[in-house]
Length: 383
Ligand SMILES: [Zn+2]
Figure 1 (cartoon, rainbow, N blue to C red):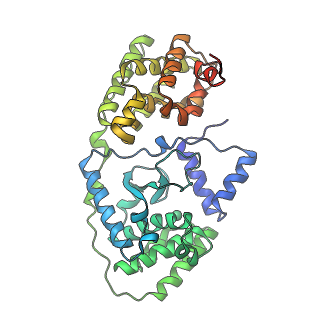
Figure 2 (cartoon, helix red, strand yellow):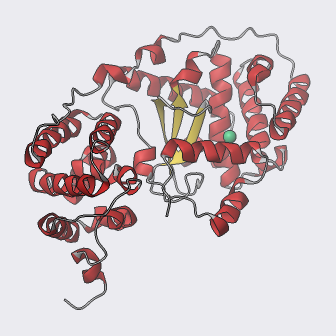
Figure 3 (cartoon, rainbow, N blue to C red):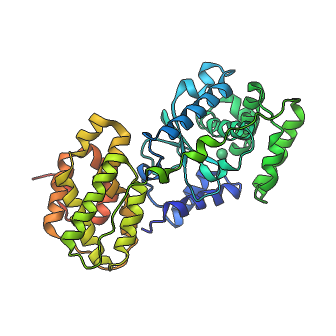
C-alpha cells in the first residue's frame, strides 16, 4: 500500500473538497480503486508545544473568541459546552486557514465523531488576517463543522452543502457576537476559482446583504501568533556524521530522542531522521531504524505507563511514539528489508508489555516488523 506524505494527503482532501463532491462519498469511491493511506493522527496532530507560553496565549485568545461566538447558542447546540476543544497554531503547507480534527486516532481525518477535538490554525494564513472579524469567521466556520457532523438542525437549515452551511453558520455567529460580516468581501478576493467556491461566495454574499452592520472591524493585535514561532523551541538536534558506525549513529539519534522527550519538537526530529536515512539504501535504513527503536525501548519508561501518568501530549513526545510516527517515511523507502532479530524481539516484547500503545499503532509498526514478528504470532493464540 502506498503511503502518501501527510502534506500530499491533505492536498488531496483539499482537491476533493474543491471539486464540490461530498467528501465522505469520495473517500469511499477512492477506497474502491486506490486505497487511501492510513493516517496516523498522532502525527497529523503535530502541534506547537503546549508548554510554550506564546502558544498558550494564543490558545487563550482563541478560546475567548470561541466563547464570544457561541454565547448565543443554546447549550445543546454549543460546541464549547458539548465538547472539549483545543486551539493550536501550526506551520502548515496547505492552503486552509484552519482545520478541525478529532484528537483520537482516526483512519479518516475528516471523521468528527467523538467528543475531543482540536482546531489547528495555519500560521501563514493567519498572519495575513487584517481584523479580528476575519479570525472570528475562520474559527466560527471550523466550530460549525462539529454542529454539521453531529446533526445540528441549525446547521443543516443553512444549506445542503457542508462547507456553505458552515460559512453561513459562522456568519450568523459573527453577527450575533457583534463582528462585521462584510469582511467576507475582502476574504473572498483570493478564493479559488472552482465551482464549489463560486457557490460558497454567492451564498455568503446573499447572507451579507441580509445583515446590516455598520461596525468597523475590530483592530487586530497580530503579535500573538507572529511571536509564537516554533523555531524558538526547536530542539538542538545532532546529525550523525557519515563516518560513524551504526552503533555510534544510534547513540547520537537516541540523544536526539531524549531532547524531544524533554521539550517536544517531534517534527524536527522526523525531518532529521528522514535526511539521515536518505543517505542509506532501504535495507540499511530499515536496519538502522529498528536498532534505534530497540535502543529507545530500553532507555525510556514504558509508553503505556507514560500515557497513564503524563497524558496524551507527553505520550506523543515519547520516543516510541515519535518513531512510530516516522514509519510512513520508512515505508516509502525502496530496498530489501533487513530485520536484526535481536531488535525485532526487543520490540515484540515491548509491545506485549505496552498493549495500549500498540493496539492503535499496530498497522504502522507491523509495516516495518516482519510478518513473523512475535507480537503477531502471539495474536494468533497458542503460546
Ligand atoms: Zn470547512
